[in-house]
Image (spheres, rainbow, N blue to C red):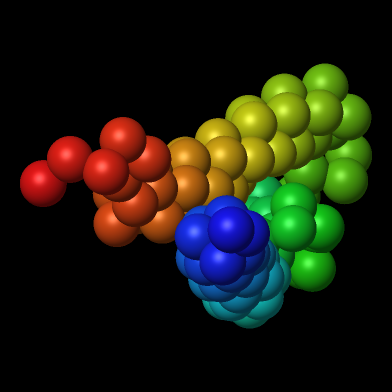
Length: 106
């Protein structure tokens, strides 16, 4: 009597495990990516990993005497590199969901 239900649960559990495995793989792959942005013609360069952690920051020495310009260029570079990382995360999520059909239609 419960054999049919057990099979459905087994299939659901198997599918959920596959989804979790795909998510774990995507997270690991994303963490290994590096995104870099430059501002001010390369006077400021910032790099982050896929977890949005800053891993490198380069500042041209000429900006050390110009605090206002440095702040503007840092903000610009940071916003750009964060946008790159966010867009990558969205793309990976869409790619992961593209292979799934929650409604069972073909």
